[in-house]
Length: 157
Image (cartoon, rainbow, N blue to C red; front, side, top):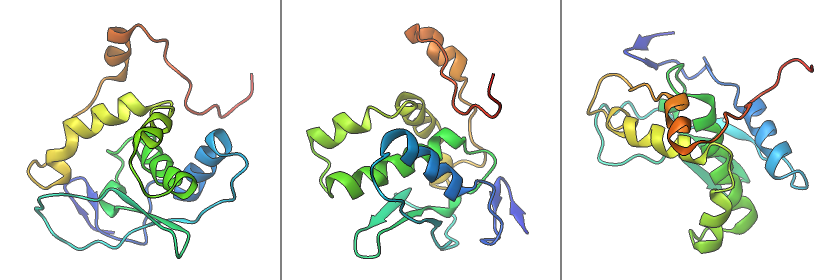
């Protein structure tokens, strides 16, 4: 495994368990839908880019691919789940990004946090900045007055 800055260069090493994250998203938001394989895409090795496709849904192969740059401990789990959720919506609703699609997209629990994380870290994902910025979710929720949501409960209480 080679680490370059914050990016893990080995495709065989996975920081995030995509299968587990996808099953959580499916169980919470799409309980009646069948599971879809979620895999890391191939690393092209480019350092700088103009745009980035964070995820894709392939209808013919019934497969979701996640960009390998997100295979990093610096990328929060909720952001990867938001990409999986977005691509799963394409599986259920079709390819269009219409009003109905965006209405459903906003139903994801961490939609606002994901948009905020992406806004702060897009330059890093494009290769324009070396390290990701930390987004303080507590401060973000304090602005909106929301109570923090529990993302994953490991032990029943």
